[in-house]
Length: 388
Image (tube, rainbow, N blue to C red; front, side):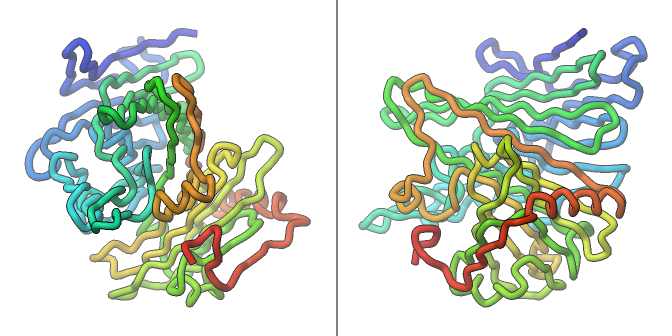
């Protein structure tokens, strides 16, 4: 096995590579179709954002080290996968007022295919008794630039990977480090994510993490379906309860649509893995989110079928908890406890299905897990899952 590595950023040594291209020619002609390209964007709100684009010859994806190692977009057979946000990103964290008084400033940088929410908190904004913001929407990690970034190529297995180290620290409060590895293999339509979160502090701490994975047109369309092996589903609030009868089906664009959110517990295999599928109305294209429920036991489905100009999108969101206010989730025990020097690993995958046959196979895998399990579909929000 021959693994070659390139360091793109290393804050400790002052290294910053603004532009780099790695191709099959750099490996003596091995791994034809490979290209890894590092660029630094210029102009507007994206000025200074680093992008690492990995192309395995069939599928490509763009990693944003400047934005907490999020995934901006992916492409399969040349077709873009993601969503069209009214935010024209990627937005540099310096332009995202995530601590502004409403607690909603995070939304000014939101346009990725995959954005992490955490690490101290990952849910709705929360305020202290005096009305001051305590926890902002979805936390801080998405707006923390990586301290170190590497790319690597294994010319024997065909594995291509981007690794980044992101820290979320505050003196006297917490010291967390996330090491993220995003990988694929030559010719695959599947990518894997492995995040390790370490507690660098001498004191114990608590962590939350949620993967906000977002899809819009053309994959999401009127009549699209969400399918997963379901143990239990509950609407988050009264607005979501209005749509319980069609919670797993998507409508056409509707200007002014108010979001609907559903909390799920999924059936998993013997190793804890559970698939969640989004497919288009025709059943000809889809994507499966594979998450390990031993690490990410809670699943959130976000439906926002507003006008395309306002962001026609759905979120498939495995997490350590439900995205309720941080204090509420803490009282329910939906946090990860880390001892001093301790660490936790979180794993998931994205598998893109470019044909009806592959969509059908994904549906069959879900049906096999669902067999013998009758879902509990709750019509109304109830504690302790929801802030009732």
